[in-house]
Length: 196
Image (cartoon, rainbow, N blue to C red; front, top):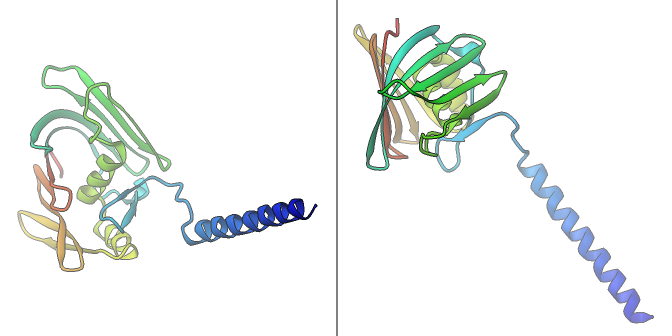
């Protein structure tokens, strides 16, 4: 009888400890339901609402990406306004190779051929860093401990995201070309199109 009481007491104590740890864990780090990407190991960038786009788009773009030691080139039809980002990716031979949509805080991405590194949330995040309003990006970066800078010139502008003094993302923009380099993750992307 004493052994049974000890066993019940042990399991009751174990249940209380486990419940306490799980309560602390969930209280310390609430689960984010909106789509996000990790810009650094500690900085989680929650994708901005579509209303923060700087210039509306409905055009064809040539996207060149370099990562993993390989170059990739795609044609994309991009529609981006205050309600949606829609992209249809087309190979240089004219075949549709992927589709992406960001609407109402939900990212949908499908592709039978694009590498897994072409994650939908990462594509939207890079697009937002390049084409969304500087003020919204600055606020978002400050809220996660990063620093956003924009320098506007006659021929275009440049944007930079810093973690302390370390440059992690650099973007150069002109009327027809946008080049994004992610120094931390070791990849680059170039968008060519009409961005006026």
